[in-house]
Amino acid sequence: MSMLADQNPKQVAPGTCIKIPLPADFHHHFRQGSLLPSTVAHASRRFVAALAMPNTSPPVTTVERCRAYRRDLEAALALAPEAVPGFEFISVLYLTDSTTEETVREMHREGIKGFKYYPAGATTNSDAGVTDVRNVYPLFKVMEELGMILCVHSEVARVEIDVFDREKVFIAEILRPLVKDCPKLKIVMEHISTSFGVDFILNEAPPSVYGSITPHHLLHNRNAILSQGLRPHFFCLPVLKRESHRVALLNAATGGSGRFIMGTDSAPHDTTKKLSACGCAGVFVGHAAVEFYVEAFESVGKLDELETFIEAGKKLYGVEDGGRVMCLEKRSWRVPETYPFGETGDVTPLRAGEDVTWTITGIE
Ligand SMILES: [Zn+2]
Image (tube, rainbow, N blue to C red):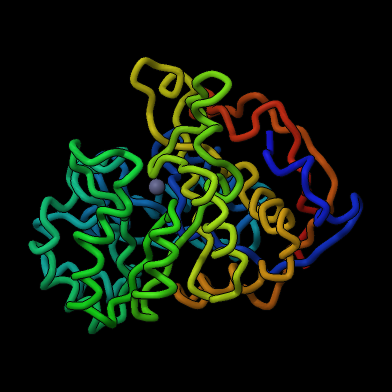
């Protein structure tokens, strides 16, 4: 289903092998409980590190909950036979209106990298999110001083704002003032989905502001959801946008600026929760995320820019890879219709039943 497949003269020949620095994923929903073994297995054989999103139920709002969640994640990792040696989880806490300065300092001592800031109600399990950003401004000042990272779901959640405009409005209402008030605060605008996000980062924000980009926002536009029938497995938040925005994101990711980073937003839901009258937002890409990024970069003849994209995030988060590389070959494999998800459920992956054109062959 890759819209890029047939129209591109820049693709390399089948059988071509490439080596890339070990990738790390700075936005991954591992979920919790019995769902962890499958999500952790997929991610840990592709990445040297992955940031575990804290919007579990209940959310990871304290250092103590973070420790408990890490124990669960590590237990699942111990069951993952193909994990990259040295794979590590990166932790952030879920920011709420009542988070205290004491918690920020405790996090710093514990090695927790920062916070995830969800505007209340913006996406899955975000009801405990921040209701007014001014409530947490004093914490941002402490984070700025300690060099911590603020991961931002950059969409307003107000129902009266058109769902396709929410990133643009968030930049105007929240981010523009925030970067003026905290110009040294390290901010990652996560899963940017529009040219407005790209332009803000490249032309307006201070150098401490980065953007993460998902593979599905690089490979697909909103036609994937809405043309040729309603396709709920392409529905995520931020929702896929029109083609001009996809092209802007692809140019940003492959442009070599060092301001854009990997962040898959792999967000599995049980298939029954996607195929519903009120389906959940989230695309599961954890089964082939690195392969999808390689396809996206190949589509514009920019495989040589993958290194900058991979390394920018690792530098920001301080991820070490021991100088190792990942080897991939241009050789197709078929994605199953579903993967097991928890004890009895299943998850429908991106490109279910279709081919992925790159295969991971090893790590050196
Ligand atoms: Zn997410």
